[in-house]
Length: 230
Image 1 (cartoon, rainbow, N blue to C red):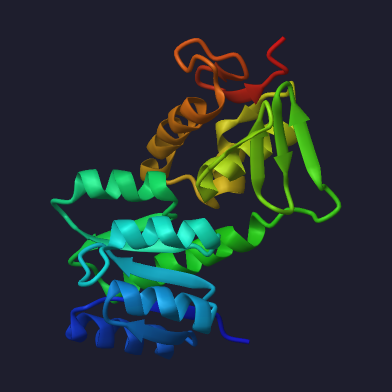
Image 2 (cartoon, rainbow, N blue to C red):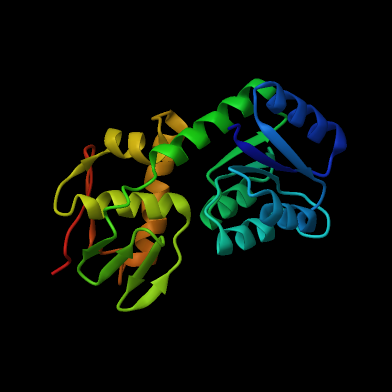
């Protein structure tokens, strides 16, 4: 069965070109021309991946990204203008999986789509592992829920996956290459630099004092490990 792609883009020429290119690669593509239509299509079309433009009428891309993450873990690729660096950072923190700056080639976009779908597929957790606990951090793997002292903490997909990998390897160092392979599916330079940024964001969510980590420890030049914090 072909993967379903929801393309939320208000520029008709771009939308038609992207849809045609992805359809030629075997994907099923649904187009939504504004944010509200995209939200409705999410519920009716049940996509395997969303391509989301940031500048949308009726409901902008950042707000839509946040709303999608409140009800779905479907992978999201953002389309952004080169000047929208702050928006890209916010979008990634809200849970987007990747971004493609405009203008872009159809070949690059298709490659990003395949890579994100591949990462989503390989990151699916073994259903036999139902929960993980490290100190006061508890993870319900099947429901993708994290609680600390009983209070739920929202983690975007990438941060959740990094925390899951570390918790599954409690007290053991996970080297950078292994983290790249399991969480990103590749170790490009851009993604390599993103690892430390995502770890910083993760610490801000789970550490009592992020500047003096209790749980997530860095082994410089090697990788990361999580400890009980005692």
